[in-house]
Length: 90
Image (tube, rainbow, N blue to C red; front, side):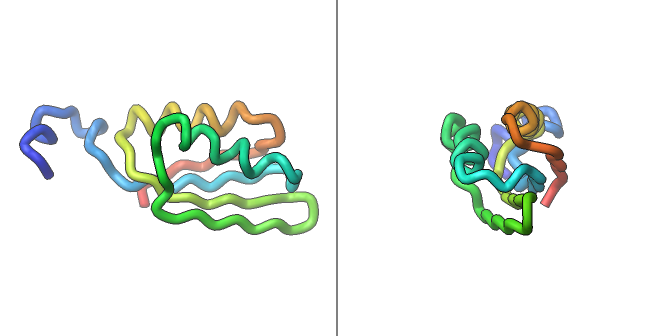
């Protein structure tokens, strides 16, 4: 924790968040799921993709604050082909 972290509200502290996305298994969907991270200058600490039949499950962990986590979740949910987005602390 840095000195600046003491001035932030608790939800604004950088933490590793895990997102699980269930989506249609379509060839062009994976790059669209990574795009919201790239736009924010984020590199996932962990990324795993499993495709089974017509469904794809993407799990990723990324370090960001609570406000940014909410925005990222909303961006992922807005992508056509996404069925569910779950967000939780890692």
